[in-house]
Image (cartoon, rainbow, N blue to C red; front, top):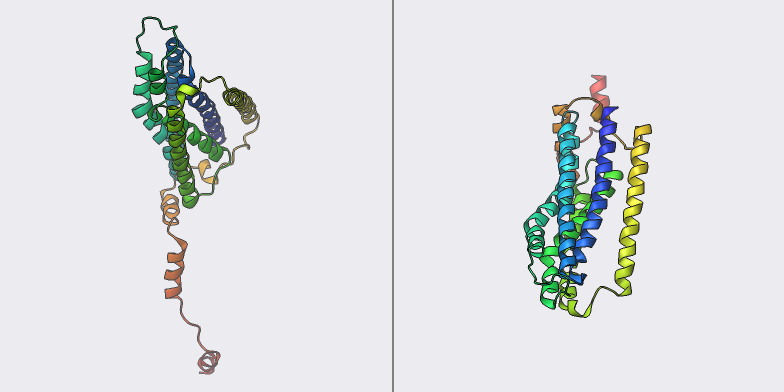
Length: 278
């Protein structure tokens, strides 16, 4: 079925988006630990290119949403509720805060670019405004890919609020961590064991995600039952069904109170027997 194939493509895009986001988050965080200005500029250019690729992948997912709308608008609504806070908003923050800082690093001028970078330039590359938006985007990509592969039920307002709160908490923690790292940047040259372990972990995760994306794409091409598809995707949009689903988002306690107020009290057994005898 066409809808199942499109859902498989959407899942593959989410995995590839996560893969690129991991590289962008690690690369941007390591700019300040480059030894020379030329190395810092090369890392900044790479991070900027990865951000452009992330924007392209996000545009592809938006195009899929528009295609989904021809089948079932409420399913597009479901995906958009997850896409906006986990992908669109962090990507917008990167365009507003991180991109100008990356351009500043790329435009750095030095008489001898191969000389070691001084403390001022390294601290400039370790600003939270530069690093945190991209790393928050990476956290959002992890949540987004997880929810695409293991979707939540239709009514998931509480779960979505928890996910948004988790993303905001991760952003606050990243800001605190980056500010602390920036203060001691002159004592850290990026050669300690923790940096080596982080590098190995990121590259291993990228390789595993790439392998999973290839296996998932091949499996999707052979079988169309990998991604769970709602029955409504097999037909065009039913606006009555869409309005009923939106109305079902009302809190259940209010509905129960309204129903309890309209229930009639049962008549006594004696009254029923007298009415039947008459």
